[in-house]
Image (cartoon, rainbow, N blue to C red):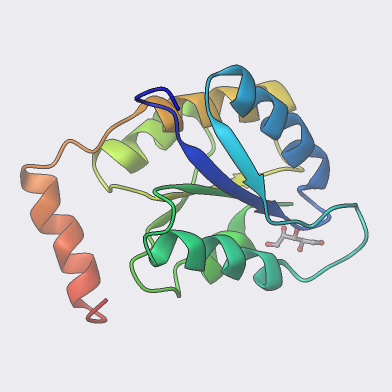
Length: 151
Ligand code: RB5
């Protein structure tokens, strides 16, 4: 693996399936690897069943960062944030994606597969993957998020 290369668990429901297929290819093109936790077609499924797979993979520390896609991104984000050590962020722009890492140390990116063109989803994903946590004063604030639930 290259020094900055990450293996990124990725999952979707039927609302995010098409976007997931495009993003997997894109993520590989920009120098990372993906591991696909489903779903594997556009049959109707329940987003929590897929969110939990990526959230646990990241929350346990097995993987550094993950990506979840549903129609709006909301259900994936709400579910992922129930899991210990997860900070899932719903991003609608490259700027909001970058800030979610720089200031909030987001370790899961949630995307609205039905609400943005795939080229925008790619730009958001790249901005998120290219960003790093700034630490400093943000470290204390992120710590306070986890103090609320002791995890
Ligand atoms: C599925 O119809 C839709 O509700 C789901 O993809 C997601 O948008 C939920 O938050």
